[in-house]
Amino acid sequence: MSHDLSQFLSTEDAARYQQHLASYTKTWSPVGEHEENLVQAIADAWWRLARIPVLEEALYWKGARQFESKVADLPPAVRPAMLRLETYLAYEKQFRNLASQERALARHAAQLKAELENVQQTRNRKEAQNFSIAAALYTDAKREGKKYDPQADGFEFSTTDLDDYLRGQRAATGYRFAR
Image 1 (cartoon, rainbow, N blue to C red):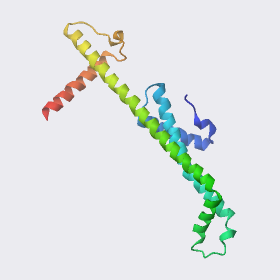
Image 2 (tube, rainbow, N blue to C red; image 1 turned 180 degrees about the horizontal axis):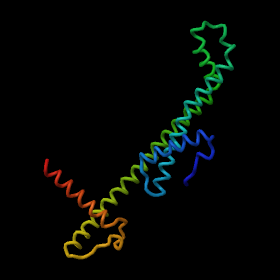
Image 3 (spheres, one colour; image 1 turned 90 degrees about the vertical axis):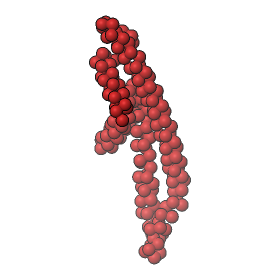
Image 4 (cartoon, rainbow, N blue to C red; image 1 turned 30 degrees about the vertical axis):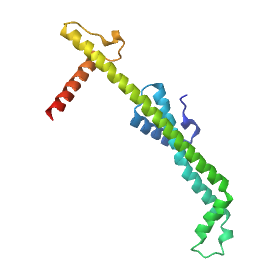
């Protein structure tokens, strides 16, 4: 599902999009293709959401040029408001479509974010559970004077990772009891 929106953008916009995507990737630190796709979809939704106010202003700019002569005889203080009103009335359908797209994109982005948070929480719980199980096996093996290979039991981390985990656990336990 991964796609590269930047291929459809101007060079300048493509560079800004890549920075935008990098920012979301840094914030969410996705692991695996599914999380990467979710992060990209969230970034894409927010990229598109950010364009909506620009499109609205472009419509008002277009209307200001189009209806300038229509409000020329009005007092200067009311001309800007009347230009915006004339523009809104002439392009009401486009403004409503943009508002509808904005609501739909915001909902979609919120749903994607909720899904990503759920996926990451599930992954983190499973990883913590796996570390706990592997640490217990490693500790038992060390106590019995045996070597332990976590990969042999299907874990994706090393004994160095387990040593770090156990050090962190001891530090956290000591911290809790020191308070």
